[in-house]
Image 1 (tube, rainbow, N blue to C red):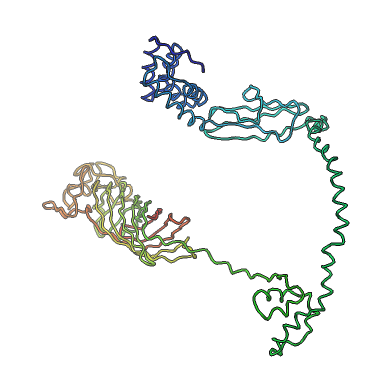
Image 2 (cartoon, one colour; image 1 turned 120 degrees about the vertical axis):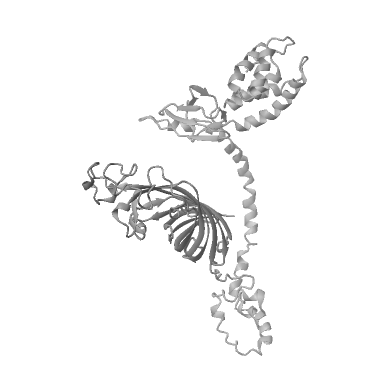
Length: 538
């Protein structure tokens, strides 16, 4: 980008100030046209650098680099303010930073091609083997062609700081024979060095003249010393001190001289070995190295404190309702928990806080032994918090405790902090209003809510004010355990309740050192417990 020469006049200052303020606020889309307009009227480093900053934020790194380098090469001019001088100083640092972010592309042919032309986005590249700079995220189409070869193209997109290199291999056209032209390249001039070899040949004549003199003085004759080995004068001199050791006189070992492996290691370490090492006193035989048994990898470090979270829910089967009465339905109580556990030898002590939603749609129910007329429609939207502690015994299933079997129990307390329990008198749903003879026992799951006493007409045996549930009509909310309305039995809504899990069975998976996953099931007071969670070592 080319800038106008600095001027002392005011044109462009208004746009520059507006653009600088917009750039500082992060509104580059608004700042760029203002700063470009200001720079077209007069150039100032204080407005050029913010313009480059916005280009960099927009991903136009080449434009930003050009401006930074242009400003960094400037010197203080008359009319420049302190802000301009500070911009020049900062441009030098920003130029180096932006250059490191600009990705480059290199196209290297695997072999020389005659008439090779490489184009990137339709623009021919002079030397494709030199790094070419492009803005990141811009799609590039690389096209290459050469004489006698088929044209090839490739689409790529570079990322910031990426240094991409493409190995270019062109496919010859059918019937094209361009290979004989390749040796007609610059290789002949490279064969000039052989011209220097002739002067080296006469120099090679002198060594042959010296070689005859070296032949008599050849080291090979001394190698004939092995036949002189039978004349071993030194061993006899050493044998006198060995005479007390009368067990080694058998001199049958000389024919065993070729097998000198057992005697070679002796000379350097023990005094008895010289006699065995007569054949080659200067050689050291190789002794088979016994490989040590592979040591097992170290065991995983035991982690003592874990923090986890996961899903926890209860399943209350219909049979649980039938233990206390008739009716009921299967209920799923979803929730979740956060747990902190600590290791005590082979046991885990787990403290948890859990949430549970005891939601149950309209369900018929009556106490055991009560007549059919006592059926009620019960529904719940209770929500509870539970706090408890569990003790689990870990049984590792492998050496590193990747898999562990867990067995234990838990107890705690729950608090229903939100929601209500509703109870409404019910009558047979197949009855005909106004005909009392049709209000006979039937399928309780087809019962309907009473609207008021004897409403609908003829339902006085079901919808009345004669029993303990005299006021159980739409809108009735069951009181808590700690409330006893005057003239009424104690409420049934649980506020604080205990819970017990016994037993709890689980499987722990520890794929990484600090991460584990837990699957557990158990029997609790509120139903069948199930949970799936993960934990992280602290």
